[in-house]
Image (cartoon, rainbow, N blue to C red; front, side):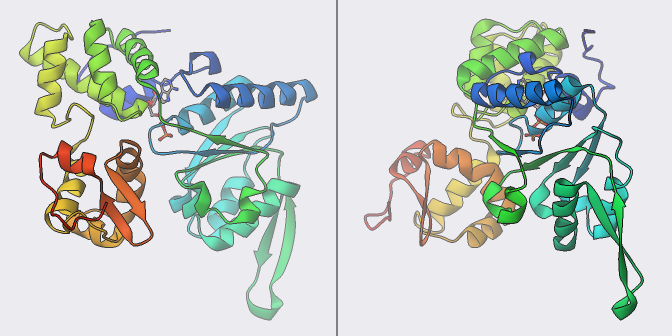
Length: 334
Ligand code: ADP
């Protein structure tokens, strides 16, 4: 494998692509998912068939796209990538489905955001490898069945619960992606540093791992920021001191809380006396979309014990008050 240079012309997204593991045994962590997936792929290979459709559920940056690419690579199959928001009408989906090659892996990111009419078309395609193309309008409209090549759908969603049951049921296997342990993140960081040719000290790797919110994408991003800092302000070595200084500059605290996390806690405590407050009110107050707050920030805040979801809304926990150095009002809701 070629090492990626730290050439400034490579933007972050390209670097992110270059850091992706290409095979299942390079993929760190998610042991259970890896085992399950490897079984699904082995059995498909044995039967010489396209593997069952696979649903990946989990937060952003946990490796869903990477795994979809690995599925295609391991099957030696071509890969097509699209996403729910890109499919606004069923015709958009028909165009993709009808041009799939035999055995192709279709990665449909954010599948829960696909247009409803397209969903129905997808059910039929998944089950019968068929697309019904509607010709004409009104009472004279007819559906012409079109056979499509057997393919494997890999759907990704940050919220499996948002998928209609008929869609969820058509997946042969659901991979639940969880947050990564600090040790796993350290392993990912060391691998990435190797690919980037960045000399990363052991204690620096541990420090970055601890602030990565259990998420490989964040770990890799922080690594690049620390590398930038080391190159510009230091001697190029990624030491513990450099890592701390860089992370402070980028406002990532010791627990990995970033600006948005702290804005949420700040609003929750200072404006709403610790809650309870509804998701949409909270989102408006920090100037973000509700989905961003719910999908990007909340899961980590909940897991870290800073935020609780109650039937009446979001509530700051005593740990949150302590972490932000604030005293809760006597009537605070916990
Ligand atoms: P998602 O599709 O879930 O948002 P991605 O698959 O795009 O996440 O992963 C984001 C980045 O994190 C990728 O660049 C990849 O290099 C890295 N990554 C994700 N999971 C792993 C893993 N298990 N091992 C190593 N690197 C990973």
